[in-house]
Length: 256
Image (tube, rainbow, N blue to C red; front, side, top):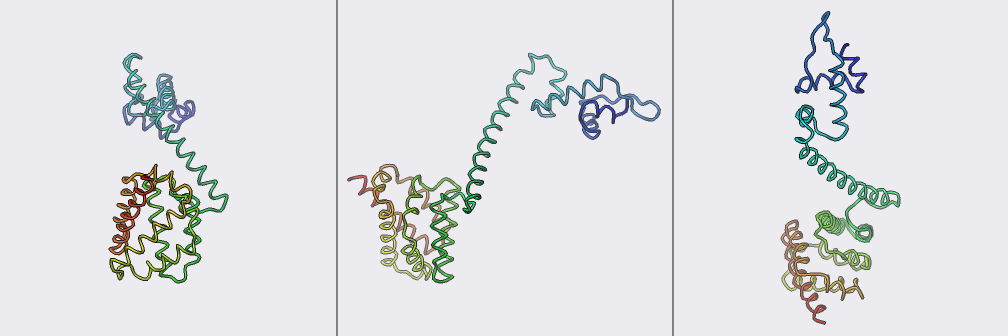
C-alpha cells in the first residue's frame, strides 16, 4: 500500500511516517511501479510507534524499546513515568495559578503576584498622588513589591501592613521621597526611616507581636538586599536605615 493509506490506517500523517523512516524507526519499503509499497509489517510497526508515543515515551527512546526485551526496558519505562509524574505536578501548579488569575480578573483586580491588599493599596496611593513625581515614586514602590513577591522574598504576613496602611499618610511620605532622597541629609533619612517603621508597626496592630515572633533578621535582610540591588543611591541609604530601625523594633517586640 502507499504511504498515505498507511498513515490513514494508523491515525497519523504522511509527514510523521516519513519522519519515523528518517530517524531509523521504520524500514524503507521496496519500490513497485514508481511508488514505495508498504506491507502489513510496516503498518503494524507504525501502529506500535504511535501507541508508545501516546503512552508518553519520547521518540528517541522508542527505537530501542521496540526491539528490546521487556526486562531490559524497565528502567527506561520507570524513568519516563517519573518524568510524566513531574510534569503532572507542574501542570497542577499551573492550573492553580491560572485559577487565581481567573478569579482576580473576574473580580476586576490587577493580574499581579502581589496580594490583593498590596495591589489595592498601591492603586489607591497612585490615584491620590499630588503630582507626577510622587506618582513615579509610588510606581517604583509598587514595582519593587511586585518583584519581591514574584521572587518569594516578601515575608509572610507582610500583606497585613498594606491592608491597614493609611494611603493618605503613605502618599505624604512618598511625596517627601519623591522630592529627592538624594538631597536628604543623614538626620532626615533617619527620621524618615523611623516614621516608615512606626507606620508598619501601627498598621500591623495586634498582629505586630505574633509577626515579630515569626519574622527573622534573615527575612528582613532578604527583602532589603533586593531593595538595595534595585534602588538609586538615596533609596539605598533610606533602605539601610529602615533595615536598622526595623530590626531594632523586631528585637524590642521579641524581647517583650
